[in-house]
Amino acid sequence: MAIDVLLGLQWGDEGKGKIVDYLAGKYDIVARFQGGPNAGHTLKFDGKKFVLHIVPSGIFRKGIINLIGNGVVIDPVSFEKELIGLEAAEVDYSETLLVANKAHLILPTHRFLDAAAEKAKGKEKIGSTLKGIGPTYMDKTGRNGLRVGDISLPNFKEKYEALKNKHLGLLKLYPANDALDLEKEEQLWFASIEKLKTLKHVDGEYYINAALNAGKKVLAEGAQGSMLDIDFGTYPFVTSSNTITSGVCNGLGVSPHKIGEVIGITKAYCTRVGGGPFPTELFDETGEKLRKEGQEFGATTGRPRRCGWIDLPQLKYTIMLNGVTQLVMTKIDILNIFSEIKAATHYQYNGGSHTELPYDMNEIEVTPTYKSYPGWNHSLDDVKNFDEFPKAVKDYIAEMETALGVSITMISTGPEREKLVLREVV
Ligand code: GDP
Ligand code: IMO
Ligand code: MG
Image 1 (tube, protein in one colour):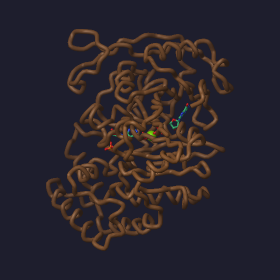
Image 2: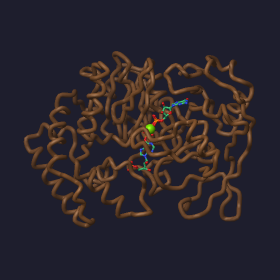
Image 3: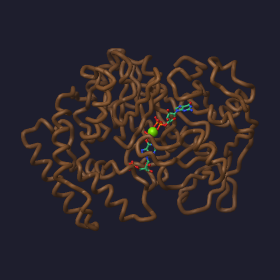
Image 4: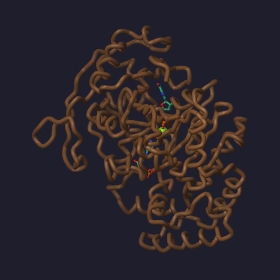
């Protein structure tokens, strides 16, 4: 059996949580393979709203296994808060939520380092969510990290102290921050480690391969977006993990041969939160209209998201990197109020017209060339089947498919689980 993948093709917040929550009903296992509490995946159903950070978005579907894979970084404190939220919603995760032994732990001092490093960067800051993501992945690749499996070792406390002391040494490189209360944060952290101990731990790589061999259907849920990938995103304005399809292999322990469908998700426009280049960003009334209508405020940090038109060179790039086999377009309803819709088809830079992203995107002026499409000025609330869309929607979808070379199999018309128009069954 193959493992299907769903991931974001832009700078995150494409609506992954909503679509995974819908698709989960068709799978046996949903697995997160990278990222950590920097992610915020919003789910809406039965009049309720949930924001998940490291818990996979299949958790509300009865009987489905949700695996937090080895590529994820876990802050036990924020994880416990998430679990308390699930308990309040009467979700029994005791048998369905699994944590990989090889997932790395975020320490309080990782968060302190994240904050100190960002502050030191001044105007050049990444716009990190300050959840400790970068420093934790640095310790992973630096071979210093603590992992979930370590929490039951007799020398766990010693390992913790050694890493913490390394961090305290590093923090001396930055101005002192008296607002950080390590003793209090440590108490909370160790209390949450006790909660983490009560969960089911697995060797994720054996678990997932055995499941695939037994014919189980597995969906890998991406976090962030491909443009935030550590290798191929708008470096250094990226996150610290591989957010693209290849990250599934490292983040779960599956062979590339096992990858099945790659479902790429894009908004009908584009957003970004944090610093870094964003060629189609709009600083005018249209951008403000997208933000207001789309409620574009971060699910994790509440920050206003930067907004702009959909960017076809950018999407072609991430479709290429991921090997996307089908597309999902979300938030098409946000375009209902626009009489003219635009998409960037080319970039102007270095005196020429291009369809490729330049290496030095952070340094040079990149000016998009746009194509316009007529709007539909119509609510899409009642649309259940593709045929019921206004002609202008169908034309817009067809134009996007032609430009991107991949079929759009799902179109999302609202935040709720049922606001989804399917064109082919996945
Ligand atoms: P994720 O990080 O990719 O899971 O996305 P977020 O949850 O951070 O942001 C997506 C936001 O858009 C959330 O508030 C969703 O409830 C909302 N959303 C998802 N799909 C749609 C849609 O088709 N229409 C509208 N209006 N909202 C949507
Ligand atoms: P989901 O899964 C949008 C951004 C941050 C910052 C950069 C680095 O909800 O789509 P980090 O905390 O990783 O050091 O931040 O990446 N970022 C996201 N933007 N959606 C996310 O996740 C993000 N996770 C990180 O804003 O610019
Ligand atoms: Mg999000």
